[in-house]
Image: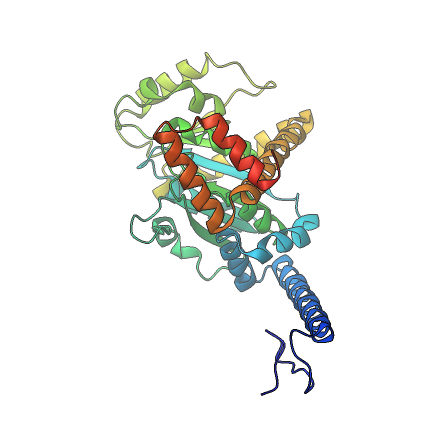
Length: 359
């Protein structure tokens, strides 16, 4: 039987054996050539893929978001390819407690932008399904009216247990939609209270949604959520208690220092009837003009990328130190020793870093 070069399908000439020096050299050369060809093929595919994303191809965008969520090997190269085409989108975060009608508000706001012929991207961060680990998709069900509109792209993403309400990959997805030509990107987050502060690091404008009739909303709201809001919306404003809620909200906002001359406005909407939506879009536009003129938007982007780079470095280091099954097994072994007080945590960290060459 003629021996073959592993993974290549190529066969060595008769008389050569894998133990021979020349046979080994042939194997190494074939393997290197195959790896080079594979990398070149992947690179060409990613470049074509990136071009389709930039043209707004729905399938290409969907595949790219899935790759980002799954941390696929080609996701990073794809984001590198499309990055020069980013920086044009305006990111608006919509946050608030469950039951405030955020999804309907986002749906109507997206429709308002589409009437102005602006291309829109919607990222709806859903609670993670306890069964599949995926998004429950409630938001997309409520936004089915846009299904036939090629100028809008809607994607539900799972929080995957992150308390901050933002899926791990939301920032990259927003970047991708930016590259795909979406000039308005709306990010709806899971309403879990003060943990929503995570969104302020990503969005250009943060809209906090409240409704009357949910108890002492204002009294129980923590200062952090009040401070991150750039615009406050009283949705379902036709309900009883709207006047009292607005009065309380304005009283609390009066205690918050204006940021760079901007005092957050309080708007009333009834999203189900499309009332107040045009005014909300105008307020977002006014906020954008104000902060672009003052230079605050640029400062915020610098701060965002500073934090993002630190996160990326941490992620790379963790992957290097604990990547693979061996890393996980070692971590569990050391964690067991620490839990049983056979090793202190500082020595365990030193052991992990030493094993990765970082110590």
